[in-house]
Length: 519
Image 1 (cartoon, rainbow, N blue to C red):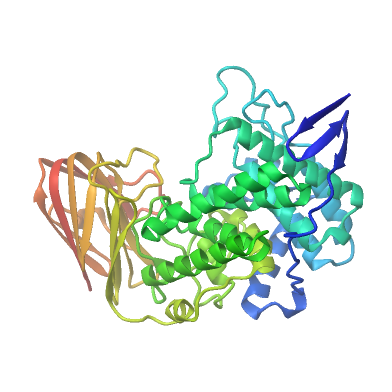
Image 2 (cartoon, rainbow, N blue to C red):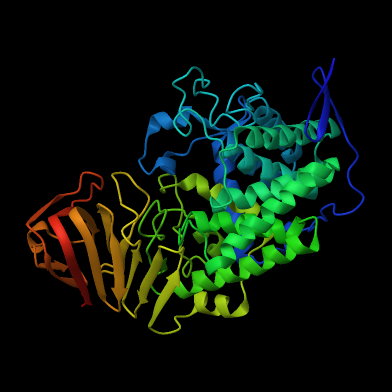
């Protein structure tokens, strides 16, 4: 019995691929491990050592590292990671040492077994996050809680890199299965219809993968639709030269990955040029917000997993570590308990594609260019402002009161970082709030909202009795507080266990100004 999905013809369980296009096919970059720049080679080797140690030779998957969730949990070592195993497979094929090809093939086979193949389900074409989790099933299945649709493109684009760069290092039969999996991932994404071009980091990867599949399969419909998708993602970016997911230490790194795929493997000159152009714009923006001495990006952060890039692995920090030595990069010295350690395992993708900032941006990443304000329009409603000072960085997002910060959000609309006398980074940020505007003017952060806001503070050596309603006396920083509020409370944070982090509540806020004075 024959039946068709876009880009391929399936006969029972066998796949007959259409011929690859004679034009537009991706050209390998042919990156040689021995010739990688020293900083890129360093972080690649560190990542591979970490993945070597996490490899489970029986399951043919990598295990979850302790620090991935941010909380060391010995029980998490019983879990395996499907997406991250694809990163390891890419790294193994790039390293190409004794036994690496066989181990990579085993890992890829294990990943393929975790793809969802029921075309009647919304999760069709994505992959289990771990084989230990139950299959999504029933009417109460919830996206993100029970499955992650983004695994389609994270794993699919890694397959793409392998099939372009190292096809001769894997069995031909395995390559056919990987092409089939990519086609199914694309078909599943199209069928689910949940993705929009505004969702920048996933939209960029989807455009790259869709273009790759369309070109390989010589699928005219997919070629047309993927090209339109790529143009729309680029058009939205150039409205304000910004992504909707603005200024994210983690997701900017995924954006750089997607753009590098465009500029390296796009099937048309238009797509390759768009990737290069937006990539350069993005690096320039990163450089404007970055402080080389504090080794952090100034906020605000639309999506963030942390407030100090020296202590957790952020994808943007990984790209920067590939450019900078360990004592200059916004990146931790990783160990088994490092927060988000598994994001380090994205290093093979970074090594294959290579960071490519403009010369001016690279210079700002290496040396502080002097104190300056940054103003950026993000969308029609939203704008960002930041002060990159000699000793402190502050950021704010004015949303025209269209965005709030609910509990457990990744949105940090007001942020500040500085270096404490101990040498560690101190910080505070708006953790929870109703719809909010935050504007920064030099060292003043002006907050406008209508209701209760909670801020988080962490600074090594801070004491709760030194945090009062109108003045926070912190190690290395004094913050004067003025505003229209009805109440104040401070308590030790239950999230951070070091005893020097606090949650501060101001109730019935209308206007609040925080003025930071480094000591």
